[in-house]
Amino acid sequence: MSLRIALLGLLTAAGPSSGYDLTKLFESSINNAWQARHSQIYPELNKMAAEGLVTVEEAGPRGRKTYEITEEGSAELRAWMLDEQPARMHRSEAALRAFLLPTIEPHEAVALLREQAEVHAAKLAKLEDIRARRSENSAWRKPTFGRYALDLGIRQTRLLRDWAEETAAEIERSAGQG
Amino acid sequence: MSLRIALLGLLTAAGPSSGYDLTKLFESSINNAWQARHSQIYPELNKMAAEGLVTVEEAGPRGRKTYEITEEGSAELRAWMLDEQPARMHRSEAALRAFLLPTIEPHEAVALLREQAEVHAAKLAKLEDIRARRSENSAWRKPTFGRYALDLGIRQTRLLRDWAEETAAEIERSAGQG
DNA sequence: CGTTGACATGTCAAAAGTGACACGTCATCA
DNA sequence: TGATGACGTGTCACTTTTGACATGTCAACG
Image (cartoon, rainbow over all chains, first blue to last red; front, side, top):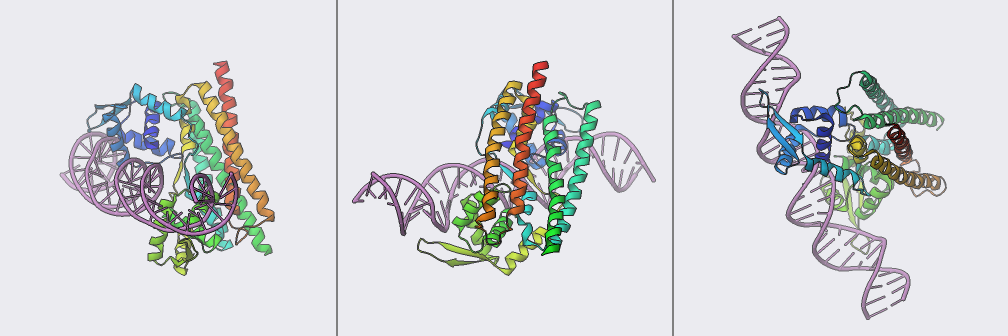
């Protein structure tokens, strides 16, 4: 259900959008929390339209279709938000690699972590740039939208960067001693 | 491929294990990074055995089978670790909910976040307990195994708890003013 | 005029993951 | 003895996700 929820959320945040727009929005805004390809998004939108959660409108010169969330769609989104489930799913290949770190040589682990730290640092810079720009130029219908997620994303990215750096240093230290 | 990698990692960390053991290990150790049900684990183990990544041995009175990682399996794991991919996948329903927070009423969001903060606090206590015990009683073949992942898990859980608390406070403040 | 690249929508087979059903052992407790 | 619960392995239908293929428009540049 999460894909559906994410799409309903984006339609709420950004207003009427095309599948193409939503694909881009997925990459730029919600990518930190969820991913989806256009090959999954287009069929899902049509399914939701058939179920009355969104409306479709043929619009524009290039075969563009615009989707808009309905009352029912909003209700579905709201229900998902308020329905507390104990088991919220979480999958992260980065964390998996952290777990598996001892399977490789210490110097390899250090190199890997340093590289990761750089990747996270770059991502962090990007996210902080987005936040800085968000203050002036608001591309969002509701200016608060995505703000909490952006804040969380920044914190998580910073954590990952710091963890990678500190763990690299720690491994280096213990390898030097051992 | 991540399930396969996780299983190979667990077999490296814990030594020869049954599918049942691995299912339990998934829940207790790697759950923070990846999840899998036994219905996915059993077939995958047999598939890996057929491909020579693990060996099987019928062992024990209750139809128990013991799987052990092979050279090939270790090579596969190592290759995955060292192969740097730009796009590491990450999915989190918690982060998705963070994004969607503005779709519900402020007081509802505050309640939700407070609840989440408690859940994360409880999980954090559990993880810190595991870490404390890990020092004395080592149930791990290689005592360092899982340590980095545990550290990362603790940091991430703490971040989630703090974020939930702080965001709840912030929403409460701005709702009181607005 | 041709080509490149963003815009735009789709399908489809295959892989990954879920939840329910199914079967059987063994130890402990009432 | 009978029930409960941990141990232990599996299948199967269904949903979700991926990656490749397919098709076409439109604007800008050389």
